Amino acid sequence: MAEIEIRLPKMGESVTEATITNWLKNPGDIIAMDEPLVEVATDKVDNELPSEAEGVLIKQLFQKDEVAQVGDVIAIISTDSEAKIEVSTPDSNNTEKSENLNVANSGLESQKEVLNSVSESSRISKNGSNGKFYSPLVRSIAEKEGLSQNELEKITGSGAEGRVTKKDVLAHLTGGVSAKISPTKSNSVVSTSAPKLSAPVVIPSGEDQIIEMDRMRKIIADHMVMSKQVSPHVTSYVEADVTNLVNWRNKIKKSYKEREGENITFTPILIEAIVKAIKDFPMINVSVSGTQIIVKKNINIGMATALPTGNLIVPVIKNADRLSLTGLTQSVNKLAANARDNKLKPEDIQGGTYTVTNVGSFGNVMGTPIINQPQAAIMALGAIRKVPAVIETPDGDFIGIRHKMFLSHAYDHRVIDGALGGRFVRKVADYLEEFDINRDI
Image 1 (spheres, rainbow, N blue to C red):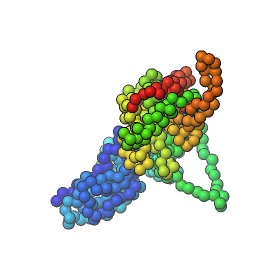
Image 2 (cartoon, one colour):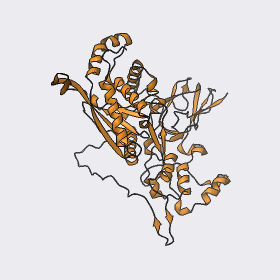
Image 3 (cartoon, helix red, strand yellow):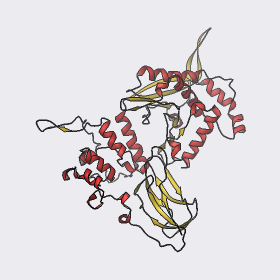
């Protein structure tokens, strides 16, 4: 009978590793095809992985909380009911996931040559003083590039649980967080590193409650800090008169619900106006890579969604410019429901080029949102309020009640100047104010 290797599948174009969070089957358990086998967590989303075979689980190659790379064998299933069951321990894993970089016993001469060129004093420990684990690949790159243990520990990790990845180390080496250190003729060391700022240590009193951040909150925290460090944020504000839009929605929402079986909210209508403005100003839909500006061909709108846990996730409406208002409404409703029910797939939260956050849903009139890297801009939609306003007519001005809202547009000042950022948000407001009250849907 055959033994079948179960490998960690690819879970998105930018996902290279995942943390094993829970085994749903134990060695000796019978498992059916497509039955959930293991729960994994990436830096994007949590997932249950189904079994690719039916039989008996005979071996787990990764323990809970260990990190596996895409393509790694994580389990073995036998189609033989009499198969020998193996209960793995952290020390029984294969050499692909070994945490020891001492290759003197590995027989791999190419690795030996690389490591022999690194002095013993510059070896990187797999567990830093901050408690973080550093993979063999990360340690190897750090040693070859002359990074010290102390400098490596200052790098903010983008991986699961804040783990430092290959991408983080390479970005540190090439992206300008700190320049490489080189000795001068006087044997002094020159560094262009900016002073490292440390968060204050807070000592709780006996009555304070201490709550440990969960995995998602840690990821959000690291991502937000990284965005503010990378991009100089500027925010432009515009107040838009959305009276026509509100009156139109009030007129059609009942018939739309009867016809489509779902509600039409303000969110897809507002996203439609943003998409139109992006087509008018394509340099808003960009990302920065070093000194290159990458203009995105597709318009993929991320919509920040609050979860029942209080955390935040950003599902993405792909090719939003190709969708009708009905299509946008269906996408918004489906993604929001899947986010709340923890049913989002990895591809649902990848590839965004511009993000929208609806702070008005919490009663806020405006906000200063943080850019969702690697995007270059984000818009906060404020609450729609009835306010007194001056209305101009051929017969004179008068005071009337209008529906108004604030649009807060935050953008990366490295590539989007105030003129472009301000004109863009003004254009979004124009589309909303010019909304056709007689529009069909």
